[in-house]
Length: 195
Image 1 (cartoon, one colour):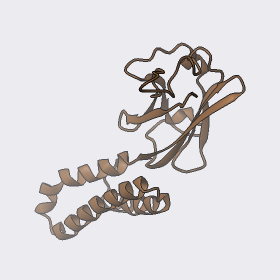
Image 2 (cartoon, helix red, strand yellow):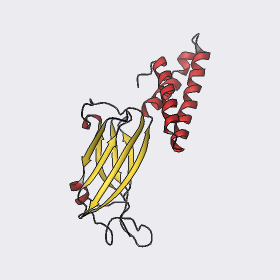
Image 3 (cartoon, one colour):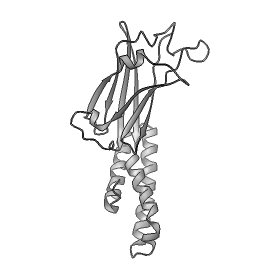
Image 4 (tube, rainbow, N blue to C red):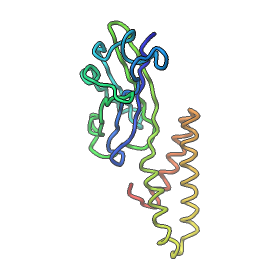
């Protein structure tokens, strides 16, 4: 068998942190033949181990060397922490939240001359979802205003666009997902949600 590395990614702290975990798990002849451990690569034998992340702008990239993390890791419930990444881990990026969009991850484990790679695209919609929640929270205030119909229409359009983004992403249509995200961001800008 051969190692088949995988990762799991989640956004934390209001999208100020990306938590990346190795989700490869331990080798098991019956249930996980691509896991860590003999006859596959061991945690201690992996060298080098890297994680490359390309941000939603599709041009900002950073590579993190995680060899020492993997070499010292203990697998608990099939996972172990690789890194908690913040925006200023990327050259030229200020501290803050990660921009909404599609991020690309490349996790590479090398054992001698053999390289094992896992690619993943991850959708981040933290800011636009925050915007929609704030729109919902303002219903009572807007209900008594003169512009309720327009607000209700924008809210429903925002919900529809969020579903469009998620659907297009899940179908691999990243162009459509990005286009719908841009339209939703325009709505959020017009209602001044400050997310």
